[in-house]
Length: 137
Image 1 (tube, rainbow, N blue to C red):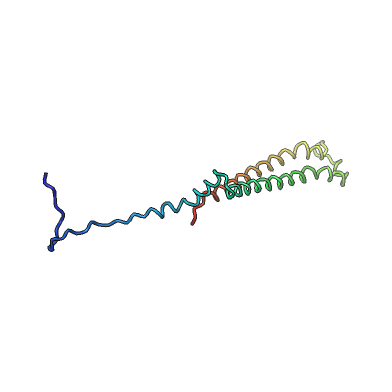
Image 2: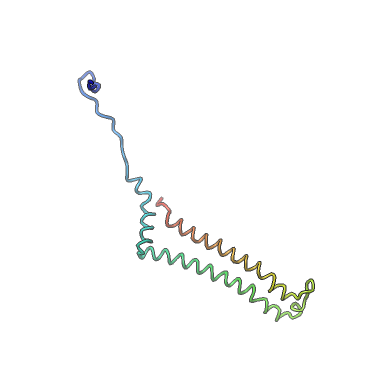
């Protein structure tokens, strides 16, 4: 087989090959911050510990707020019946109102607070994950 020679112009010079630019710095720069943050979390550096401490603090604050809601919601009922004794003697469908509120209505209330806690705790964790994986832009 014969080797083909490059196209030679009228001056006899071979045209230079077409150049292409390869840029790798932009590609690696996108994940630099996210990778650095993940590495700090894995290596338990001061920055990683501060990030985790922030997440734990947010989860604790959420738990304390919702515990306060439960304490006021259920713990306030005996105070309400002590302050207004006539309300404590009220009957609904033959059942005393205090028994109805504490024995029946408290369960949907606790389920609602538990559902709210799970949703808000998952949102805190998602915000933390977004912070760790956020690109530098």
